[in-house]
Image (cartoon, rainbow, N blue to C red; front, side, top):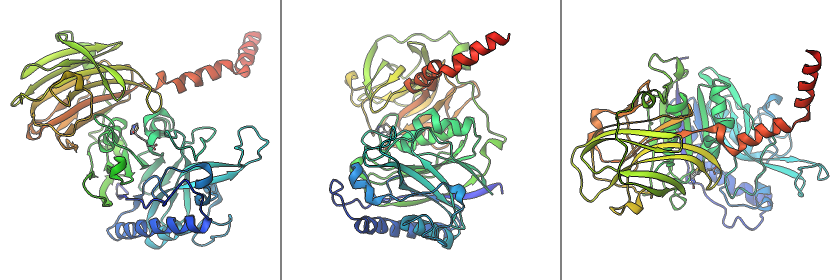
Length: 493
Ligand SMILES: O=C(O)CCCC[C@@H]1SC[C@@H]2NC(=O)N[C@@H]21
């Protein structure tokens, strides 16, 4: 089939009363069943409305903030899907598995693919290197049951986020894919989206059409709000992204959506109430086959020009702990070039009416981000400062009044992984208000002037410069078999 209906459910997870005190397996199951009761209603409703697949959030069944000991009663042994198992029909085949059984029955009874996040436990021998002292590995795991209730995918989260001390990192990143009548799917969890493996590699090396993405994403303005970054990732990578976030406003967790390379949503973002939400969309099964699909050459335009004037009044400021170079947009219209290290950004803009108590800047960053994980960034951004004090540029800001008539933003990126973000006042996506040109320019459409702008950004990830990639490189250099092969080749030739 060419099209399918996808659903994502943003779930306000019921949390354990006190996740620092161990509970019995019965108590743990009681809490998980209360969450699954809510998920079941959402899944049933999605299926009735024609959805073929539904994604539910990371931590959506038991919550967060555990120790290894307190998460243990929530875990089940999740077998490799190659065993061909329908837990609903054969619940005891791999030991006690009430959560998998229930999810499998929900998928089967409603004839819908169900994606959920649960915990896997794998016993190991404590005398083996790497085996934790408590004798089992714990994994943050995404599972998929097909419309017959069969377990068809199991993925162990590789890029654990700060504080996920209850879980282990699997020995290698797992590239989990599966075929459906509506395209090839890949799967990863939350923080994974910022890294090459497995996220980008599923698209580049495995050519998936759609990504299933359970997440528990704490929003961080100006560049890492869930709907903003996840829609940009789908556009930049050229795939569908079915993103299901946990809903917890006190943790800044909200923002789910069904993003495709061409459309920013539908999405759900709600910081006002604690309501969950079901989102639907009809998607193309093979988005890259569309006649309008192309991969931009991100640096083509920026490399071709030299006519822009460098910004005067250049200053430095912090944005999510990264030291950006900024220049203020002082006139109602202008052309600027601004560089940091190897990255030069170009901006052309016109504002409709300049609001005098608002300051906008062009910003550039080319460096290693080191807060909450290390990843190398190349960013060109046009953004509103929190106040008229330029020291506030880069700080999170949610509202704006200045409307732009037009803008065009580009940069001479060293990476081909660039994610285009445009965010409007009150954290709305600029659906149908901008485009990316084949030469790498992010340009506005005329309707951008309808709503005040918070930020427009080319968020580049230079994966090859990540410390993890460098480690992998030096691992190869340290591997004695590499030297053996080189010496053997020298001898032969
Ligand atoms: O639990 C996860 O894996 C999700 C964490 C993602 C958080 C995003 S990425 C970095 C940034 N820091 C935050 O607090 N939120 C975002």
